[in-house]
Amino acid sequence: MPKKPTFSPANTLVVLDFETSGLSPNQGDRAIEIGAVLIEQGVITDRFSELMNPGFKISAFIEDYTGISNQMLKHAAPNHEVMARFADFIGNHHLVAHNAAFDQRFLDAEFAHIGHQYAGQFGCSLLVARRLYPLAVNHQLATLVRYKQIPSDGTFHRALADAQMAGHLWLAMLDDLQRDFAISAPPFSLLQKIAKKAKADVPKFLRQYGGK
Image (cartoon, rainbow, N blue to C red; front, side, top):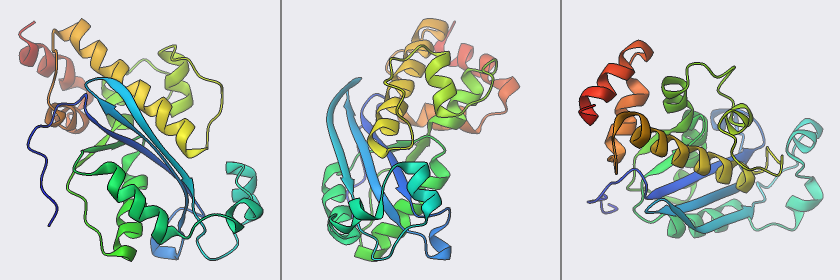
């Protein structure tokens, strides 16, 4: 059994994103690309980015949507090799994704194929953003990047680009917690609690937590 994280600040974790052959691993869909950034004490210190060959051809729709072609995947390492390397990359860190339910399903499925269990828990930048930024037009990653004026080259739907943007969004939310509620160095568990709170209850909860 992997060792559970003993120190869990919200500014030290792995932010990840999958590109996939479809919407559900239960329907036989597989990951075709993984991108991730390691954030340590609020700074991106490492990156992981690999295509992976799922063993079958992807649809023309997925090729157009992701920009990942069957020709590119033909020369990629198989999923089990890439996911073994990714397991080493994440170590015991907690994990974050934008719309984490989707990425967690694929991470669980891909790790099940290689018999690996990860130690960390998941956080969702989408759910936290919905509660911290209720005035945003919507809470898609591209919209929030513009809303928070996060520098971007405009590339989305490639795994590393999305992981990097989600990572910068996560750090922006931590900055806003400190600025607006005097919450500095929050634990990862606080962000998980925010994600589960009713939106109307979040400001009072954070004011009480931060003593502001």
